[in-house]
Length: 220
Image 1 (cartoon, helix red, strand yellow):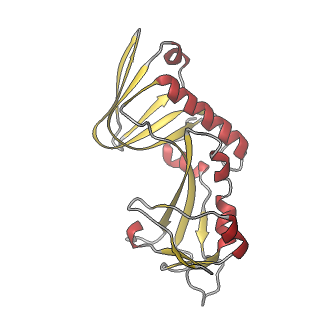
Image 2: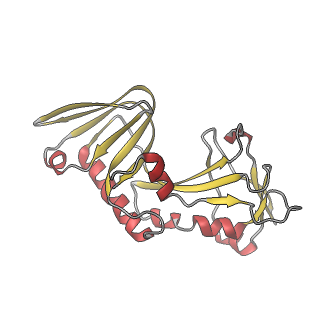
Image 3: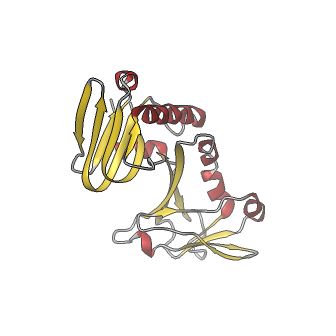
């Protein structure tokens, strides 16, 4: 069975409910080392130029937008704000110096209400066109990365890449010596390009029509 993307992301991410173990009087804080340990597997992804680890933060509470969430590290050198964009994507600094210091990481949200995640994505193409061989290479890299991470993170075969569109025509065109195919996004703006040896051998070119948000591996 092929996993839908919401289940795939759940399989690939490392989730941590922040501050759930803090004392009641220590609302919204957790030791830096706890976050560092959770994010450490992202170092595996730096070996693969077509992959990236994406940190994200969300709330378990209804009505809380990512832009309302504040997280900061209170280090000896001062307060370090953690950037969080409108989609909830974050950028936690992961350094040996902070690990040795192990300062508190604080939040303005209630204890136990935040979910912090690390997911595996592919680097988006730099333009609207690329050879299918690049997509094939990304699939192969994702498979090798998951093998290194082990079955605790995801256990399955990478069978394609799912592209998420933000707007525009939201379609993909495939052109080859014996192929002319238009793929339209579903109601969620998603198109999956499968791992197809015939497309690889046929020197297929891929054309993206629309603005891409993300590209994630698809598992079976």
